[in-house]
Image (cartoon, rainbow, N blue to C red; front, side, top):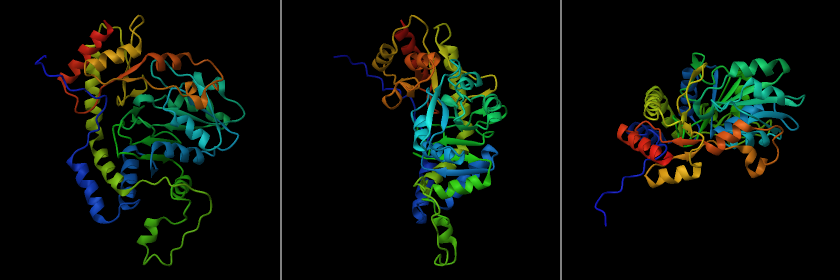
Length: 382
């Protein structure tokens, strides 16, 4: 039997969490207020200030954020919403939640994002919105898409699930959108375990979304508690709402994470630049900044060259070397709920979803671990 120790597996992602987050969560528990309350309100204010936007509404996930954003955009039964198929299935699912139809558009093969050119051919008289995704943290060209669709009365909702810390034309990604949705899932840079945020410009829309996230209550539980005794402040329910609330425990963690976001982005960009240097000459194409902004490298995806082994074989070889890589972004139109619904060919989408893979990248990744990943990948490529 070999005496050489088996190296530990390098994960694809590890959230940057520590004692500060643990203490913030514990303090929320000790306070006795663990549901949506003062820490959620503080997190909303801090997140809005970070982005430079008017309103931020904290919710239970980015999926619920997209759901509310579409309601805020006036999307409903019979409407069509242009979306990328190359996105986590929640992007398309949120459209179906409001009774509308997701219409799949292709993406730019370099960025994985929608463009005005891929969206325009799919616009019809029924198109009410476009969901523009910042895929893997690469900022979408929001201005280009808005210029193409807004003259037709179509709203652009930005799915900024992956984009906290990314920059678009000098501003935080999502800040320029009418409505944007963010994710705080553990795979994202800024995490609260689960959780999300909707940002918007219109104060009346923000107020409505705050009601809808809490069953449509006209007066929130926190406001009732803050009133003298709360007995005289009775709520009404003027429309059907949802239970999309964030807890104060999550928000306490989010406030700490928000303060760490610049350091997270800087480290990930440093590691991505090192990957690019170490992988030079392999023929692999590594995702990079678009001309209009900078990515946070939420996902460090690569496209193997022609002639490389099939992705399944590459992933198996990497796993055998103790490297946990992942397949690239899924394509919703190839999954059972949406199979056969694509109206146009989606060649870039199908290329990226079939061949790309995601490399380990996280704040605590060491150079020694990164060297192991690169050595394993070079060996896997043969």
